[in-house]
Length: 137
Length: 137
DNA sequence: AAAATTTTGCAACTTTGTTGCAAACTCTTA
DNA sequence: TAAGAGTTTGCAACAAAGTTGCAAAATTTT
Image (cartoon, rainbow over all chains, first blue to last red; front, side):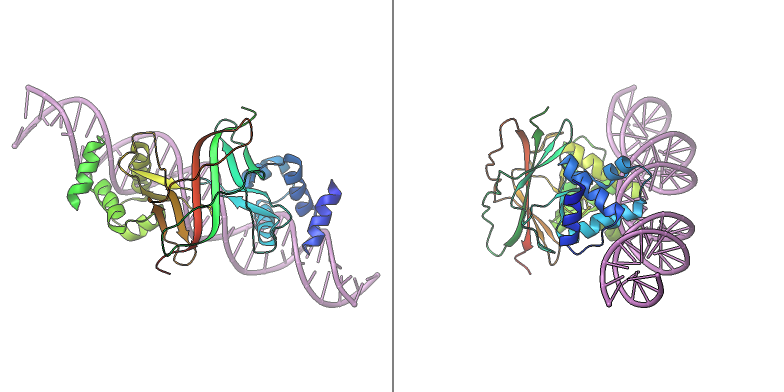
């Protein structure tokens, strides 16, 4: 467990620090999207708020996690699949947010559908967020 | 111009006030998504920050505007088509955010594609946000 | 094990959003 | 069209979310 986080940090040329290891492990353990706030709550007083912000930012830059667009103004992060490389995400999967338990899933099995845009619009990234009732609710 | 805003407010049983009229007109004039911050900047000192927040909230509740999910932590609002009724949005269109000029479009002509979910997931709302280069960039 | 580099925590600050309440405005209806 | 009822606004005060600079602590390099 701890090993995986270590490996990932190393592979991404990041110094291995307690905060990075533990925050990354959190993502592996929970296996669903987390907000900054969740992490602060779970880790308690262990890390400074600023450290969490900076850690998340670093992970996003390295392609370890990605943000999930939400209609409310919350910022959720979830693990990227291995193919993501620095500065270039290929999250060809959709997100599902449960309206009841508000768990956020990355549905890896479901690929993003084709979208036909009007003339002149060039797509670079297509985000699909489905909300509704999840399998546990 | 001023008449349209007036009509819409009346139709939604809202008192017609300067702030509501002018903020609604802004949406009609610009014809693309606006953030709270844009409105504050454009209207200058005219209205209190709190009033703008409350006005946007009211418009969302009445189905006059809707929020657009974004991956950064910004909240954008855009006009709803007429079919939207109170508390119940039917925005069966996709959103496009330009990475260059960051204009946000509601692409009414493009309908939301079908998405097949894994067993146990029941969709209620599907949001599609495409980002890339818009027709003017 | 020391030097070089990176990261952390703190303090201070900015931005964003919320709440309660009195004053101002809008709507109603007589 | 003026008075009263009801709604909305602006202010103040606050809460939450996010940022920046910098010295101290930790990690990595040699």
